[in-house]
Length: 540
Image (tube, rainbow, N blue to C red):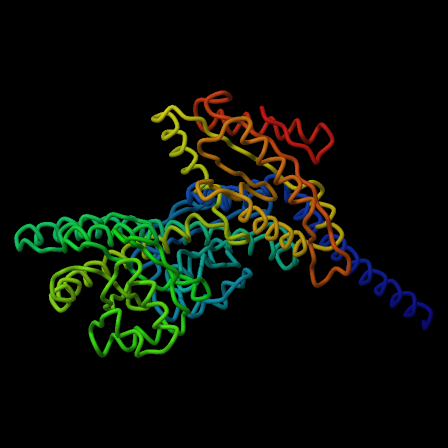
């Protein structure tokens, strides 16, 4: 009897262990199936689509495909934010439903619950924030996971999914998180572009209103107001000074102002002066601005009362033919000093400067706003260079300019040799550090009229206006030697790394009449440089 019980116990134990083993095997198979469904080339193309083009339609379509194929999602619902509600925008695997049943009210409580969430979570954790009709439908369709499309303080949408594979594995969670973050970035870019478009409309309206008022009141700042559509804040300063000289009728003037970056030297814009002069130190400039805030204006001769350095700078102003100074802030946070020479009374000139001050401040704020929005849409986050989106736009513009003036244009595309070995050996952070360092070297190697951009991955491109074959070859040779001669040092690596690059070049109009043809020619030249043994450059 005892032996029979023991045998039965052993049989039951074997069955239990076998069941556990089968469950583990099935779980592992699901995990392997999830990994096998991740087509790395497809996933890489998805990430590249978003970081280069940023089209919501393309990115959202690829997200849906990857959710279905790589994540095994049998049911997908996407509710997109529209004003004060989340409405159905996309669905897969469901039928016979009323869209009103899926609508969710947009509330601060819901936003706070979703804020900071990265990985997919159980729907049951969110039910208290959802309407009863939606919860009932989610139970009916057995949707058990959700994840938000969220970037910074903006909720753009909410996904509900049901998958046929193991959803608790790290690989599944990481893949879904990557999809959500990429789509969130696409929506955020679109939001900024929309904001940029609205800002353009407001500026156009402000221009028309300001010009109408100026004409009606015969305001002296009318010439300055014509600059309201100017987009570059740095070049705008010179335009403002030039228009002010015309409007006020000054013999000569110079404007001294703080740069964008506080560590950079002070900037000077001159109009009609007899000679150039250097700006004072930041500390003395700040002291002068403070004194001018009290006095309104002073003569150059009075600078001797403010110390030896101010007196020496006053002598330089006199040599340049400038006699008076007045405070003239560029914007609320950037101080400026206007200097001038004129036979009229200084108080009269200062009064006219004050009339221009408000208009000039609005113009600068508009330009800075445009630059900030454009920077978000056209800047590569890693290197700080322009991204592919900006590169393509500028290449079209430069080709049009080259056609108009019948000039040549160079295009260089290059990438790093063997960056993959660094990623494999030291990790992708080291690879990113290399790419960032290459961007710094490239920024210091170009002319002021050239356009540099990160084309994608470890590829960079340079648009070189007014450049022929010889100019391109000279640049490529110089850049080749500069990269080879650069040492790449990183905290986690004890030895210095040395890199080489392969380059391909093309020239408009010799190798292409439009941007697509020119890029193709440069890309094929780069491919030939790679095939020739790397660390080489070839012009098509």
